[in-house]
Image (cartoon, rainbow, N blue to C red; front, side):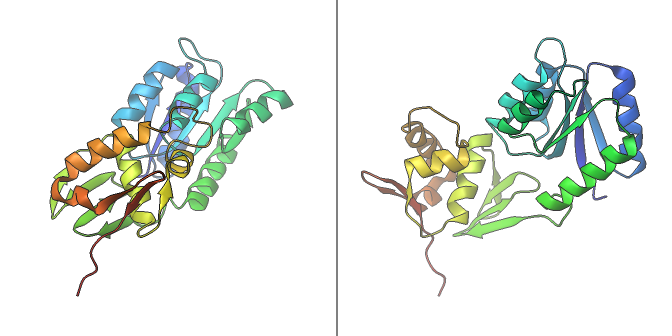
Length: 228
């Protein structure tokens, strides 16, 4: 299963064990969190998580807020678990960017089937996804960046921003468009936050930072020199 990592978040240890046992039986690697705060910390420490199974009712931070926190930083697939069969809860989950919604009690076999379907749909079960241009190489699966063969450390947002630039080489990108794609559509911060992140990103890229061109009054464009 290529060591695909799944995070299971539930305050009931028996429920976590049940889900973990079925997932590990299918070859997945499982990490666990007992509440929302622990889940967010664990997520930041495990950038390669391919999918999150998230319970709604938890202490410290419930599933809704946990989902918001993670969605602000990532589009990782999320399956929401709840004891409620309320349609409004389901709609709320989808509005927050939940990929699948399963009510308790549920069949673990059905849950595993849903997991497999989402991973296939998202491409997480496929080979490593690589991007490269101008001496910059990005391994999106491993969440690693190297410049001329030397690895560099980027924050999550810097990584997402650089990936978006490489995916749109030669295209002028407005600040608003960058916010919509990197920070997600529901981010209401000042668009100038882009300038701050680009400045830090350029600094970490060294000479390669010059590949990110400023388009005055609009935004940015990543353009690597064409090889002869």
